[in-house]
Amino acid sequence: MERKPVIVVQDLTRRFGEVVAVDHLTLEVVPGEIFGFLGHNGAGKTTTVRLLNGILTPHGGTARVLGLDPVHDGPALRRRTGVLTENPSLDERLTGRENLSLYADLYGVPPGEVPRRTEELLQFFELADRADQKVGTYSKGMKQRLALARALVHEPELIFLDEPTAGLDPVAARHVHTLIARMGHEQQRTVLLCTHNLVEAQKLCHRVAVLEHGRLIALGTPTDLARQWVRSHRLELEVAPDSLPMAQAVLQTRWGISNPLLENETLILTGVARETIPDLVASLVTAGVRIYRLTPQEPTLEDVYFALHGEDRAPGPPPLGILHAGPDTKGRKR
Ligand SMILES: Nc1ncnc2c1ncn2[C@@H]1O[C@H](COP(=O)(O)OP(=O)(O)OP(=O)(O)O)[C@@H](O)[C@H]1O
Ligand SMILES: [Mg+2]
Image (cartoon, rainbow, N blue to C red; front, side, top):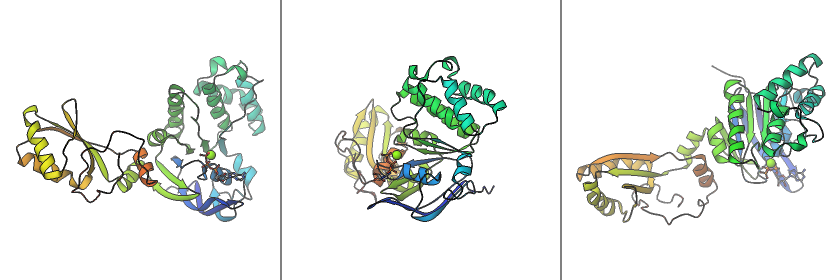
């Protein structure tokens, strides 16, 4: 089914002095999508969010958000979007409930609606039992959940979340992930999520855009990007114990892998080009190796991110078993 995009950006550009913070950005976001914005510090993610909400004026290009022009229709647009900024400021002297009510008033929620709306959000974000305590007594995770609730108090159609889990412990972050997923997947809201957390993006986002110095350098589903950018794989190969010497011999003589890592009776082969997997299997079978299991590890968004930026992964063990036969022998090292 054809869905009208919620965000249409064409050649959007914004400078700060010499710095081109957003550089001819072109993309579309469709309804119900959780769309990720990735990129190094200073890549232009927050600037784009501000442009799309009419907080900043572009120096070039156009944007339509919910059918409106952020430059001319900023106030009308902001009544329909919810924004969790990088550093949300809550009034610590007020209770959680009061913070939400205040925002509801500010965003023109009909007074008769406010108690129901705030109660629902407090329940949804699991803050109901602390709702009547001052926000100054909340933990960081609770404040972040309250800030998320606040961004939703006027029931926006489109939600911008700028690093919603920055600084949260893994448990609190996972909690926020569940809530974002429910907002997107169950409530069919459109979410634009800026994040440095690649696992978070992989888990939540239907599609991601990667920015570098304001420019879009990759756009697609995590799976598509992995196919496109990550060409060498890590394989786990489990063979019958009596086949192990033959497997090692074939790997060495035929494929130049002299010392594949052996973990729990399983050979770990790294840097294997996807295209060479069938031949590799065939050569092992022909030599009489009895294969119990061959598991290619799916590349992650983290692999994509490092491949895109042409950087090695975090320091790890030296490269083992790099294949020299595939088309992708120049791939990144581990
Ligand atoms: N108000 C401003 N005045 C001057 N320069 C700015 C301003 N806002 C952003 N910039 C610059 O624009 C560039 C993009 O910044 P932006 O905050 O959009 O990046 P980001 O991708 O959100 O980074 P981070 O991951 O660190 O939040 C940076 O070089 C930043 O210094
Ligand atoms: Mg930012």
